[in-house]
Image 1 (cartoon, rainbow, N blue to C red):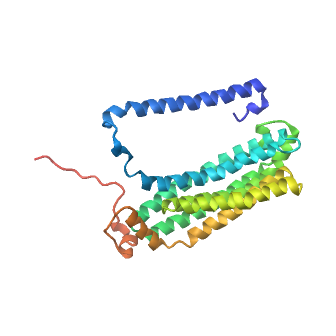
Image 2: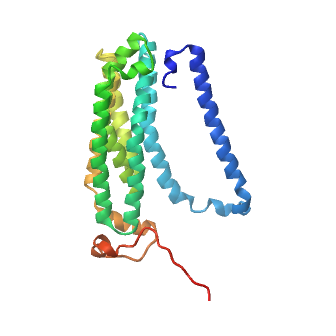
Image 3: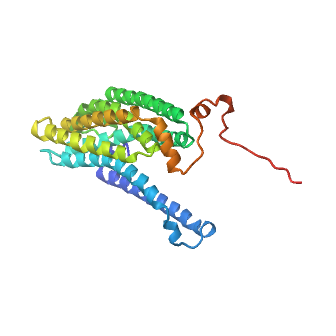
Length: 302
């Protein structure tokens, strides 16, 4: 899809249809595999299949909402572009910029999933020091990701959009907004990874509340005010996003930085119904005696 913007409308529509068919085909194949495994792995469905869903939903629903709140904001920005005086260039430029930030988002999002799992495992094993260390390392790496993304966006502002289109007005708007997008990534990468830390410590509701406040109570009024009332225009929408990302990153980092990891480890023991407790010294300073990731036991038949 990257180069189809240089072709005609028919080729662009054909590329969109091809992507849609590919997604449908993948879903169909996965559904077939899942349904094919029903008979050998499952018994007849019963009401027991619905038991113990409440704890899962209490964690899953806020996690989904946290991500949706951020991405819905981008969709609202496209709608706002459609309300401008000459909407076609802003909408097209917004599409390029959202595609760009989606490409960049893959990297902190992957790190977010990894640190969420690692922090959850360490807290579940009652190793609060290692959970904290994992969070600190992940946030530091995310800051480096944000710096790299910002550098990329700033240095390619006059070249990146040419891969999508040759329209001069779209190129102009994109080149103006790309440096602002780069600044947004300075906050987006750390806040995405910090959100993963909160998920790993069973606090997705906190992350959802932070995203709600930052994007809709700070960023949205700022974007509408700058874009339509102050007269900044298209760039004003991205300045509103920048204010939201700064606010969100600051709040996320504050929550992670002020976390009582010993308390979170105790919560993890309660959430997993684990009564056995290890001392912090035993958990955090095992050294070479720490259990391996994989253990193989061989039993010889008599």
